[in-house]
Length: 152
Image 1 (cartoon, rainbow, N blue to C red):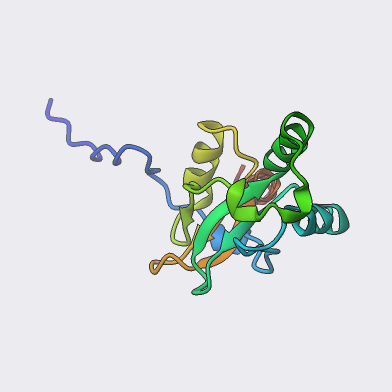
Image 2: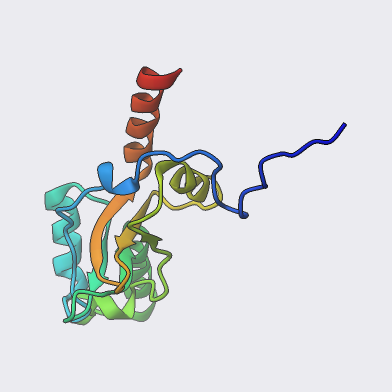
């Protein structure tokens, strides 16, 4: 017998085409600037009930991410090194090499990315590196529910 099968997908790419992450991402993203104070960032996290935010440069490109964990490091540093957090900028504590997702990715590939990391959300960028939104684990759960309701 001669079998001709479907070629294997590229590593990290799904065989089936699922909906794009842009259908589920949050477009109105709270963001920070590198020169903002940590105190302002913490206040924003508490007021907006968010656990982190992308840090954008003056061109709208992502420069980093600041999370609750990063802010907790400030508290520890203050206690051990007597640093006043009012003078500490976001750029001093943000993660400077954040993992981003392209706006062309589909929800299945995004789910695989979440399964291979500890991150709760990813910033989404366009081909020029400009921040266009964020996607969270909960957004992917919503996509899973929608997929189940339509195809399972």
